[in-house]
Length: 123
Length: 138
Image (tube, rainbow over all chains, first blue to last red; front, side, top):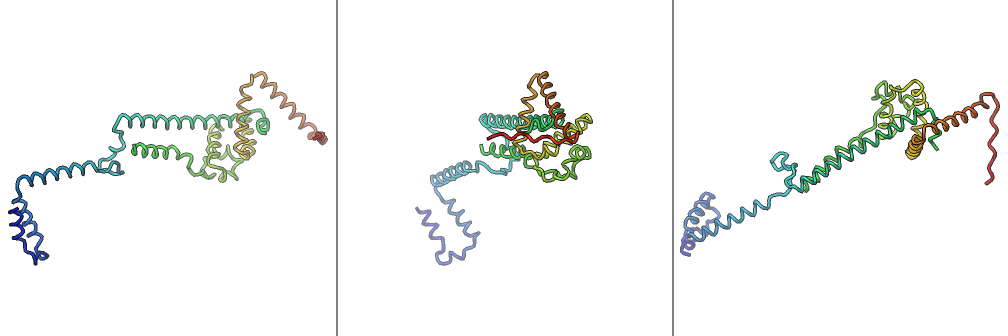
């Protein structure tokens, strides 16, 4: 309480708007040095808690996280399994499409070159 | 999980590229492709992209055809391209079913078709017009 009173008595009331920023910093430093140990400990703890919360609230997803393509790599077993299933599905779809188109092309060639006329197969 | 969704969209984008590609102009075809698809030179640029791709895939085998097959291919190409996709699908289905018939029976059918064709060609060749088919009572 005495410390607070001392600080208050040193601060000019009327000319507070004209105090230079450096002077404010000096006053704050001076006031911080005069704080008692429990207050300093409480402030330090509060600061640590705030920093921990800040690290938890970092973005879950961002296109550019500053870590290259690390975000593309699955980070858990579930993600690895999901990626594998996805890739297999895409591969299977691609092969099926190619196979289907190849079959159609073979059939078209056969129909267009067969010794039976086209009218036999077309309604 | 959002990362996986992004990957999925990227891969889908890559795999769907052929379907979304632009049509191929007649002038960009190779001489062999132009020779095999010559009957379609006029309408080629207006054909749907998928039909162009299928015809190009079919035309790849053209250099390996016999002269008779080449003639048939070129003669039928225009009629084939004018069919609707459903008609082409139906024709493929018929051909697939016919190719499963035993070779012996298939030859019999071919023989019958040949005889029918000869019978149709004979009257016109001799200058006698074919009699109109009898009208069926409804």
